Length: 308
Image (cartoon, rainbow, N blue to C red; front, side, top):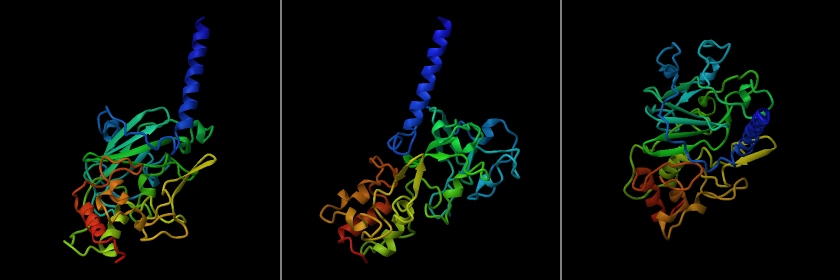
């Protein structure tokens, strides 16, 4: 009887793991809320007890180049590391943001960014059997991520691995979320994009487009450059066919900016409603009603949403 109980428990655990792996995909985790009930920053690098520096150096650089087994900082192999900014251009580091990871087993890892915007952890991440049979390969250590700051939540739409190819046993968040890349730097909050905003005569090219590039273009870009995350035999295109880098649709997108505005009722425009805090948007929250960026777009739509 005892052996039978042990076998049933093991079988149940295996079935649970397989079930988790089947739903641990970009589409399966698309509406997963950010984990709660834990202590923010509980898995910060310094909390691990590993002797180290203060983690304030090389903000925005690819941490994984050095902080990997066998790297220049091989004694300190981060599981995950990166830098959080106020803006996609990576000009203003953001301290106090929480970066949350959740692996295929449901384990929650929480880090907070320091005064340089940097965050890192040594916490282990489980291997996802759907990514391959070698549990020792960091390419199978996958996670869903969220960034939280000032009550705004931004999920990572894809399911990312800790490592890539054999030559990349650790991939820093900065590797893909760099200021020079199409996604831009990892950012959070509802900070204004522009230094000043006109009281009238809002221009699409001078005012609205920079806001959209700062807050929306990471996902909503032309189809030819749109990030598509491969997961087994499936792909997940998270642009929704919407290109927010162009006023009108093109051959590689079903919709452009002009297709998500409502000049009759500007506040009901999809371009505003989707990005607001509290909205249902797989890409997260970017502005509050009344924020400078929100008001600029609202005014532009109210003035006829011109391609000016």
